[in-house]
Image 1 (cartoon, one colour):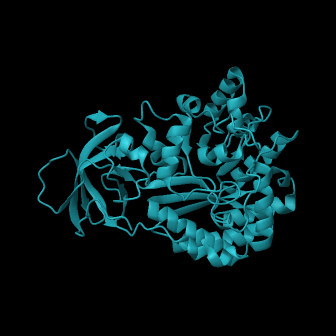
Image 2 (tube, rainbow, N blue to C red; image 1 turned 90 degrees about the vertical axis):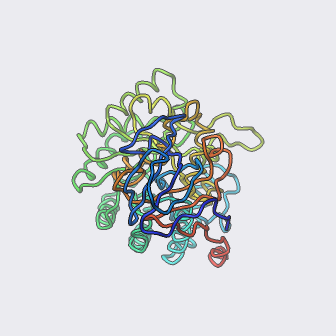
Image 3 (cartoon, one colour; image 1 turned 90 degrees about the horizontal axis):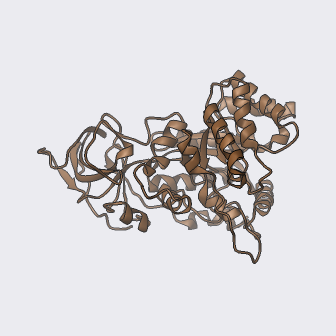
Length: 436
């Protein structure tokens, strides 16, 4: 374990002095800001933030001097696939492309996904996320029968076991071609509703897409469910289901939350078509999550050819139009993405580079903190606020250049005012599963 750069007092009341905070994550305090960073002292009492005060405010309490080190609220990873995670060693994607990923996951799911297997890999993933400083995760669960019943039951057990450490949500993932199968869709809704889940799915550009979307929105409305969809995960310019989803939400008068992930083909549209779609997305109130690491890995991949496309959506344009935008991990060490560790610091760092979320960096910290927390309906996460839990991540980095240039492996993760063991689990813990 990396030696801590500062020692957090083990007292019920103490101060984190001389800290640097991303202003966009702070409620109830303002001060001089440089690149969206403000200086402050945090007074912690009984696991909560008692006060945020100007640096150097006289307080006679035990303290840790951050020496201008940065403090973030704990992170939100709003689009993951915990059921697929870490199967790469036993089922790699030999082509590295999207179709290879689909095929490899299908084969592994049919051969190996028992309740015990899914639970062990989920637990491993959550240990990684917890150690890195994440407090809220939404996962998509493959939901073709009979796997959906196994995965949701396991998820519910894991969600209960991690209560108080990680808050978990789950969205059902299934191909839209199945939505007209009344027996399947009725059963799926029953499973999702009984486990307090979210309706999802993978949209496809079929002639009756509008009718299928109407079925989805009507079912979600009837049963009080939110929606989280995989949309346009391709560089094919002819694919634009995003527009159809926005129109369907408006047409059905749907009042719940709708998240759309990926939306990659938007980058291939003409400026006029893209702008019209973005305006419609804003009008409909959709939230967009980009998955930059996974999409760069899968898309525009051809053997012997250097990729030309970045695989992300029009993030800046969507944000400017008033759309809620965030980034997330997506897949982790599975055929859709061979790498990753459910570390939102890595996600933030790579998103800055891939999407050019810098110059300025003033509000960039929001994309893995308060914005995804708001999108997921959990404004109690992703903020540093008076009265809020002292769920914090402490870094020795003093400004953005230092923060974004290293992995920050010496970070200190605090939960309810106490430093936790921030050591990720050993991959050897999964060896027995990988022999399957």
